[in-house]
Image (cartoon, rainbow, N blue to C red):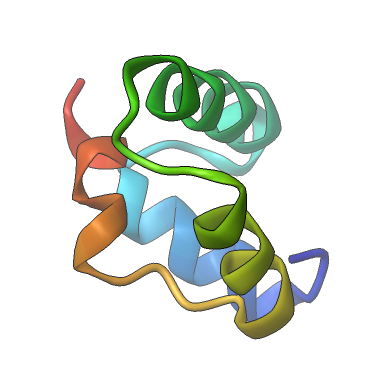
Amino acid sequence: MSRPEFKQHAMTYIGVSREHLSDTLCSRLADGVASGRIDQTDLNRLIATGQLNAKFAFLKRR
């Protein structure tokens, strides 16, 4: 997830600037876990592949 390609894709997917990416992504992923939208398996897959798929659509919510 630290690759520049992932960061660029995540900024576009979430709709935030590079300066806000880390805080926003972390906060929204934590909210996703707390609400039950995603679980550890989803996070592991994201870390392994760097792919933001439909399961992560909630990241765009704000």
